[in-house]
Image 1 (tube, one colour):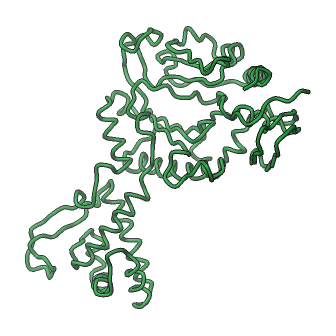
Image 2 (cartoon, rainbow, N blue to C red; image 1 turned 180 degrees about the horizontal axis):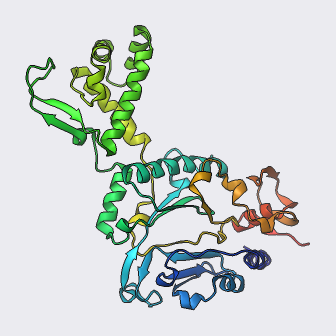
Image 3 (cartoon, rainbow, N blue to C red; image 1 turned 90 degrees about the vertical axis):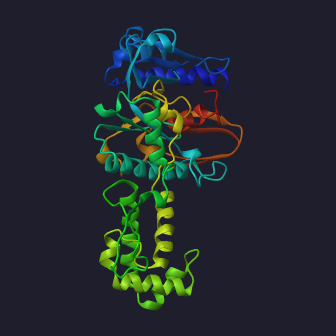
Length: 390
């Protein structure tokens, strides 16, 4: 980044912070604060600061004009102490981080920024479903990171004092890394029930968790089969790995005659039905997990971006999103700072670049361009443009 570009961005970040009020997180005085400067020699991180060191937040942001701003998930007796061992840990938020370019099926080389963020939003909904439905968490704050994805802060009282080990267990659950189909089965010795194996009735635990999720997928699949005629149902069953004509006929017969037992979680209605249940369980584990950044959640001392601040790698706002507004949230429009809207600037682009931002699409060839300021700030912050001479 050229010095002219750096000075321009730092100045405009200052202008932005002079115009808005940023809400600090709960217990701001118990948290460590850190920031990254607009230094010329690379990334300079300033940390181990307390709320007293920061002073008035709006004044600090306008005066310092940081490139990135962070606060700690942890709460401490002395958050400004120079080492973690001296801070005196009290508790921590439970924080989840989803990065678009780390998601399965995302290729940063071929997928656009907007496409990656859209995929990440789908993962976010899966994560929220797990946190709200399976764990019953209520105090959740959803934040667009301003860069590659989303953060979720959980501040329920029951999680604050969890150590790394218990947070690791939550991570394993969200990733379904410690569960398989057989662990979800309850075994009951039975006789005379007309089952293929009357000695051992296997039933999914549908009271909650992954067992309930697998059962929901089985129920949906069974509902679809019941709506099809026999030929179409058999064709669909045989599209599954390991299901040939004979197994398909056995599964369909079991579905037609034992639907109530299946809905109750019984997977032993026919030997072939177990094959179907296993297949649907794997689909559930793959399709309903959320690929979170594991170290973020297990780290009780993690620094996380301040909602309301600007992301120095994009010029977009680190934006808190009300849960009811998440469906309609478009980061490429809703996280564009109003400060940078309404004026144009000149930039120089070293390589051709395509940008979709603020409701418009911009296809820029190599060379000098006059663009909306928010586009210029976005490209300069990402290292894809330099400030042009006015």
